[in-house]
Length: 356
Image: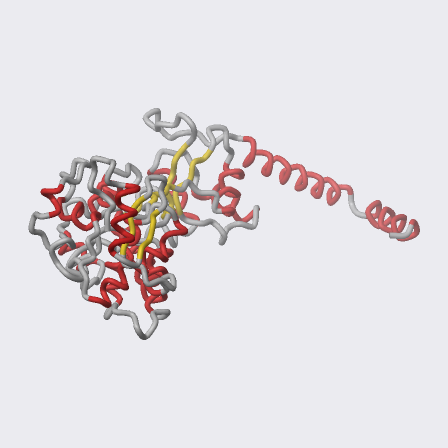
């Protein structure tokens, strides 16, 4: 801006009546006071019963207007004037940007800081992690015990929960994709199950689309079952595709899978960690030492890697494997080679586990 133009503005300002200048100054002062007030004046609890050690936790429902947000804050213990909140939100240009969710507002926060926090969507988040290899008993116990969830499914039977999830499976086992699910506090636990089931269906169908034409697996559910066994048998990720090859080779030849994790699953939650020889001869649909083919349901929640291994196994003719004791396995194509490996890695031990 040129000096000449600045001088003209000053001259024009001086020509204005003194009351106009005074009014402009007063308005500017009032605006400064207003903005200072909404940021510096602390929002306080409406009653002494409001528990706030680290901050004020407030939940705002979806599709809430400004007056409704003010009402919800009041109902949850904060002293907020609806008219002041509406004026403040519009003055900060966030009237239409306030996001729903659960917030933890600092104890010393003014209304302006609270509104900007809501506009950013800086909300409280909780999470629950389903780990690959977990069984349905472990998943349900995990979700049932989470303190931030509303427990709608605790008393639901597996059959009812399957219906709620629109799954035509004989069991909930294997139905939930292992991942960390982030959610707002006081979310329904059914929503977590829905998200995990949808994620598993997406991963399962994606893997199924990569199945080779010579695979013995006939349905996506059979893929889910095999992947769950691979998940429980894998001690080291680099062995996963070889383990898949062994089981697929056995299925093609009509051999028994003879895998300990299925027997353990058949024993159920009462399994004490020690698989005995008597367990291997006990009749059970999950005893793959006695029955040819896959068990009737998955035995765990398989990872994406296990799903993919079941449709893209290693190029191997191996029919046997035995655990070396260091997390890896030794793979064999003949029974004699396998027996030698068992002598080397397992026969000197007392446990019969991990001989296939």
